[in-house]
Length: 257
Length: 287
Image 1 (tube, chains in turn green, yellow):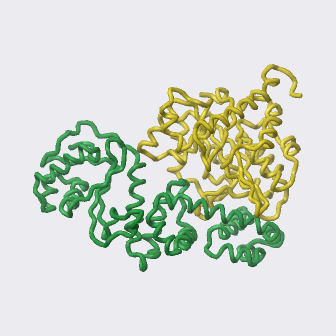
Image 2 (spheres, each protein chain N blue to C red):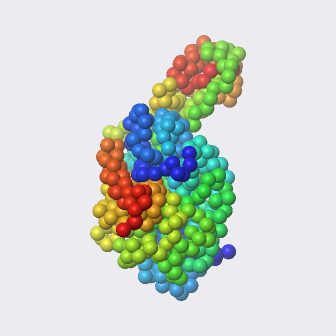
Image 3 (cartoon, rainbow over the protein chains, first blue to last red):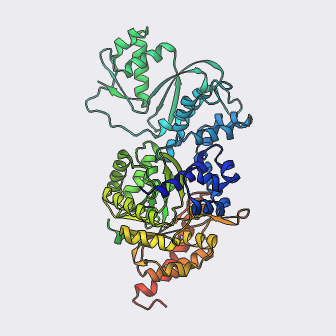
């Protein structure tokens, strides 16, 4: 089925995405095409348009990199200062992990690729945690709204289950990623229990909680009634209910069932 | 809203302008254009602003990533999202590009050139028909800028475009900037090129600025600058030859100026549009 067309698109894709695609193509475009099943006339066309086909590589590499520095400013700064940003992006693009038709999915795909590949994490062991935390802000801000089920109570109670907004995240990192800044982008080592959510003004909020509160919220997210969740997490029930009431006021919890 | 309601020069709805546009009492343009891929499945403050604008104002939809000339299957969820968005917006048609963007599952996020071959015509016609069958509104495709031929051409770009248009029986989104870009990059007369194509299939137009790459001696279709005079002249030349007041979209995707500046450029293009179509709309000869 359209084998020549497939071979042409395969050849172009390898030129655009492979880490060594540009060098191999520029070294011998005809051989580059031949290795991918193209015959004489198509090989000659590759050689004739060699320089202009290479322009597409710059465009594609640029398009796939473009959203990353804005979404991951600290990662970008750390790797850029170590002259490693370009290598990171090149490896990410060459992995062909970007498959979604949505441009916005490049950012979460980058986080997933760091998790799968482990890239750079022998030298920067905090990389995945920091990337995930940097991505969470956009994820929370853009998460689709869900309508609250009808009949929810406004106040928490020991026998009531919290109904969280879909954008709520209860996160735990081994690095204090929330302390990264423009002046000091490398996060200190140490546990960080963070809850991230969209407040009533639809702005991003992050709160640091203690490990007990984090465990309590994890149980609540699993559907446990607040009293049972507090007991399981070793938390005083009143403390748990107070946290839920605060999160309800701030928009992270839709209500209680 | 029917396609007949769409006339004049519209603007692409862009993120930096959302809050300002949402705060207006009414639309400052005849219509907006928006890429469904940038809206569907989202939430939050900006999404609410977008949806409020789309509910208030007329909108045309323009897709980016269907990879019409490619081989990758369309995701069922992506098609469901697109159909729902078309229903929500009431767009009278949906447009995509005559190109490919992904292969083997890998998305390049770039509009890549089709080989000008018989095999590629047949493949693209088949894909266009299948995509049309999936959509609740007519499907248009856009002629793209291309910087290089991919593989040995068996026909010209013009013949390739004409054969796909006729074979798929689709409407045409005529990007007049892309015609100009290609005419400079590949050395042909854009008016002769246009005269050889079925202008009766044009349902919508795009117009945009671009960037001259001195090193490569090549125009790159960046949508990152104001429309240049030769493109405006070609625009004015082709409008009466189309002979109908089709909607025209001013594209601006990079170096996005403030809303006031963008609307000022829109107004200048609207004046050209009105002047070019005046003889047609008043029943005069096209001169």
